[in-house]
Length: 232
Image (cartoon, rainbow, N blue to C red; front, side, top):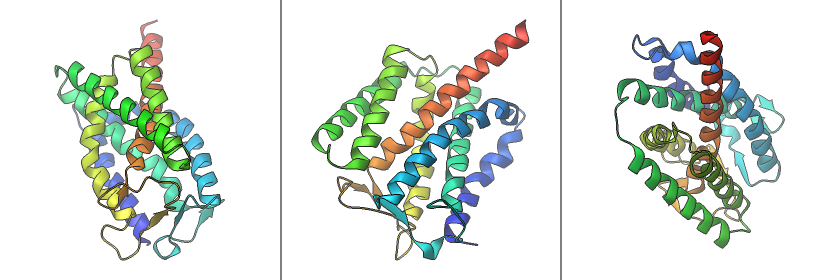
């Protein structure tokens, strides 16, 4: 089994096993979680394949199984199922175990910092395709969902995203060469700003935010629709 596949397996193991926790009942959300992940995941797979095709990033054949969907290894396809699932698990755990947390200040600080930094990076590094797309998309999503729509769940999302930074640093670190001589995933230096958190390009933060935020949005919309239907 490839190193990338082991990383995927390690990422999903505990969230899946704990999905049947008696307090959270995370498995009862599968009917809203998987449609959300699949809808957003399709967009990101197209984006991922396009960037791979244009060598903005790529995958070390040494660390993958050798099974591909277009230009993407099987493990990369699974990434867009496993990582959102694990992060949504953290999101629902926070909401379930800490329902009375006062998160308004955290949510505002998170939104302002991500939007401001995203705008600055987009402006100053507009020729870097990864910087431009990841930072601009995350900025637009936060402006639309938090500042315009004022989604009531955004503050919980902000905390969940920050909590997920801990496993994010481990998983993405493993993918970008923190524990190996060569990275599993490499990035073209022409399309990133060069600032790294360990071995992780800074842009990955905005990329993951751009992926997770619309998934939570769809998940919450579907949950509300399900609740209204059950009340009628």
